[in-house]
Image (cartoon, rainbow, N blue to C red; front, side, top):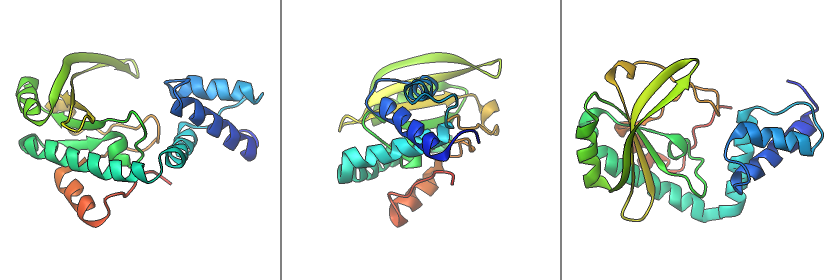
Length: 203
């Protein structure tokens, strides 16, 4: 790794502050702005920033954050039970255990008829929007159906429906650098029984 470890840590912390308080929305510009502010010619990894961001969220949100994580995982379990036929997977910050203000419940489903998922999702939450979204990853377009909604206690939910062809493909996390494995319904049930605040962050 480049740079002085102490300075790397300071840049990561500054970038995390920018992200947490909304001065920046994406990691790359946050890291660049933090490095410029501290007059450094290198930036930390996304993982280093993510670890600092998790610390800042804990410092600012305290025990309420822990209680909200448990509640969000319970809400995810309720939604995933409705979608159980389609083998849903909990991903995102609720899976990781790194939620912060503004975090939502992210669930992935692999199915070729997204309308069926939308019908079930309407039983689980109030739908605000549903649309096809195409992004480019490594030069290849990837299209998925995104369903957005809110639970009865006003937690945001995003259900991403991908084609069954993608079900076996490993997806790398751009933030943490590991596989986007997530939690199946059975795994989430086990976590809630044994350690409802467990984190899934690569060391």
